[in-house]
Image (cartoon, rainbow, N blue to C red):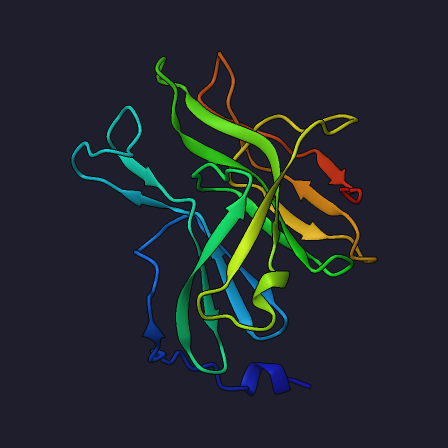
Length: 199
């Protein structure tokens, strides 16, 4: 009936407090507990070579986790403990409702010495349960999902990820995969990852 076409769509410059993340590209922003926006990783373009940039001196990757409280409109930087989460951009980050944790897959961490973009195919799990009771000063926990079985997707960046309907699996499709012949190859295959409980 055209109601959707007549609804107003207005951009508003939000006023926020706290410790905001640095300007980023190719990061992820995942809604958690219907209140918090969890920003993971991302990259910054560097005009000149700087420590932490890739071999071409163009990018500086981040492994930081920032949280925006959408009710109080306040940023906080989370201290993530546990396994090492390598800096990256172009990854996907998906909340699995069944566990309440966020799964991160893939991304790029820059260029290898031979000039070919270095992409990743690792799965990392971010457990935010420690943040439930007290967000300010709380810490999250990273867990590297190593030893994955089955057909592991080729390393990639710029892909899409979402949760299965039952909230138990990470689904991944698309993305750019590096190869020895081409700088990037687009992959249209669909992959699923079902995490198992860790003891």
